[in-house]
Image (cartoon, rainbow, N blue to C red):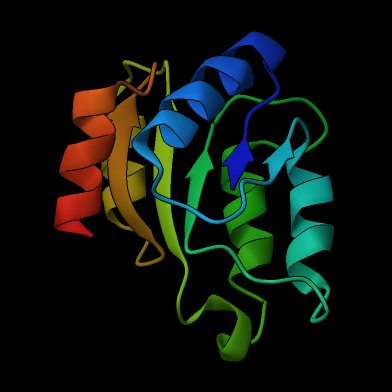
Length: 122
């Protein structure tokens, strides 16, 4: 799952992920609140990995995480969240490191080598 308000960024990341042939289905959202609604629907397949941007309109990445924590464990248990952002603010990295649901913090754009490293690590 990609959650990023930038359509061009999502397009680029989608190509990287599809070229890596590492997932069965890729779901893309430009708004975090829509992604959250998707995750709340037990009829939808939960993603294995969520690439989450921080700075987005309507609901930013931090707000998404606050609401995500409220989901049942049956939905969250197999999901890995990677913050994927342009933020160079060290406090954002530290904040993410203190959130147990966040497995990693990376800078955009997602590149082939970065994806391979994440797949091996996760």
